[in-house]
Image 1 (cartoon, helix red, strand yellow):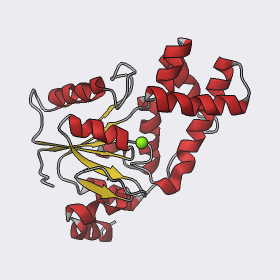
Image 2: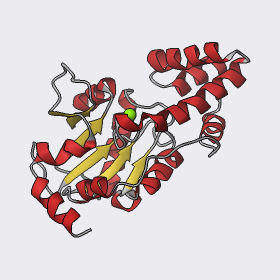
Image 3: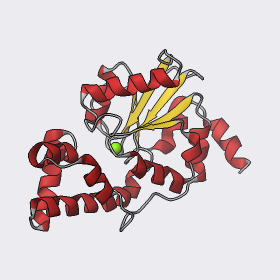
Image 4: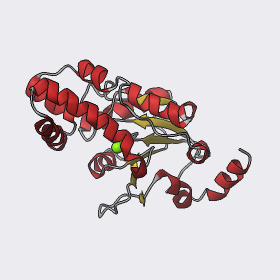
Length: 229
Ligand SMILES: [Mg+2]
């Protein structure tokens, strides 16, 4: 994989920038989403849980299903689920910071959530200042990955960031095969970040973000940086 200062890194947030070991972060959000479904559908908890998963599968995101089937307003949805009640954020990690900081090029978030969720998480991990922007679901007009329009949108966003042209390399990192296949289709280089192996032909696969230096060959740089922390 060719990387340079003219590489744009598109990091998914959930289960990509924090690891599968920190799945409790996403579970705290899923709990809020289920509660929102329960209120909207006036249903019991088990039905709301089933619907949350069903819409995610069928419509790409739970929100898309709620919009199509129940006319839910996206901001009402996110105002409810992103309230800090019961939400958990990933812990501070100097090692993660060193890994991302040492990557050449500019880094962005490309997430199917609203910006405030990843913003708070990046802040909690102590890595917010390493990113040049968050391309969130509102900027995708609420139609997230893997809809083609989401990738067209992020390309337009990058053109603006780079003064009119796309950067030489665009590398997308995501824990979702489905989202990453969309990225491949859009012409991005792809890194699958998931403890489970994929059969798909991505450019690279890692179990977690912590393996990034190994596959990109900048391990020594990290070790040096961390020794100075
Ligand atoms: Mg994810």
